[in-house]
Image (cartoon, rainbow, N blue to C red):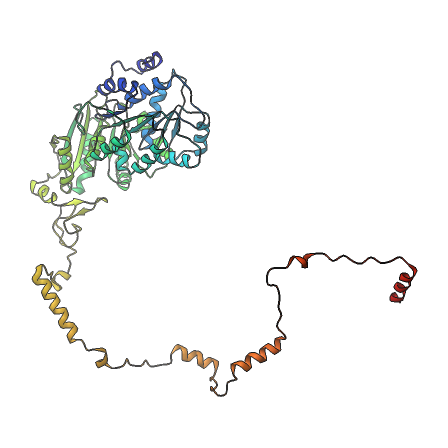
Length: 530
């Protein structure tokens, strides 16, 4: 690479490239398409930012026509990539723009008017500006799709396909992700042309620098277990992940009430609040950050010591991304997960994906979860809202048994089970059909029941007639033709007009006749006046 880029890398404190950087950078400089798969925290971002800076250093961009495009799934990740370009390109005369939601569209439009070499954007805001005619993608030579599997999970793939259709056919496309699902591979085959696949580690594997642990707890003991872990471990700073935004807020208030230095981060917050909270956490003003999966992808927080999974993630790939926030750049990190018996299926999927079981731990002072409870919880599943579901519906409903907190649930039985027993099988269906036929035969027919009984009291129509007085007899009424003739005579003869349109000849002004100035004419005028 060029000397200004190498100087900026050296000033950043990096001496040797990571395996993904060592293999990807030469291929990108050759102009080939790349599909890179590596663990989180191994330097994938620098694997495409450094060669892009070297490629773009030779020319300048035109107004509203960026020369390269980087698509990111979240605003935080887009902001982090923009910081990388500022750090590595400080000795180059290149411009970059950040197009994300929650920011002023007018300011972003003004930056595009000046010409942009590197455009970093989320799909939604990019399409908004494109539909308004504020940006053209015909001159984009390099496309980077970062965290492609996250794009798939968040439903951005249709937007990405539409954006790619606006780009020129002759371009260089780069795919980088920590996991590579079959759907993403088929998508890569659609976008990439003869790509060079670079995989420095098994997909969805956990870095060896991360010490993991699993604690089995009951639902009502999760917050107490988390507080004891935070006090027991030497936590320098930590991310605490929850599955739902509402749980993020509840856990944040609980930890703050118990005296912890904590903040919250989720998608329902304003963009300014999200950036301010993240900057405070990076600066060390707050020690703990309770967050949703919005912070699970690509965020590089220097020296992050711990990651806590307060909730077991719904998707096994999210576990790899969550704990990948720690143990980065060769540093040692710790990741602990709190699991209830109802999360046994999700936990089994995580261990199957990573290929290694998570070491079990116990917390003193809490009742241990028995293997029988874990086996019973494996028969259940959690819905998207965190509600425990059974094979036939809600665990806390008519099934009874143990509730979410492990205690016996003796209430809310369905009394209809005893009143109307369930009929199963062919014999039950036939018996039900015979009973229905017998009931129809026993019911009296309409003719046998006779006419419907007349209701007592005056009807509404009778009341109205009473107000108008008695109606005249038919022979006392006037003939309709005579009534119409008398009405027409009262109105006079029929008037014929032109309707709403006026003929043009009626709009012509009529000139006044000129009066003669002769004595005879003057005498006539005086006679008329007299």
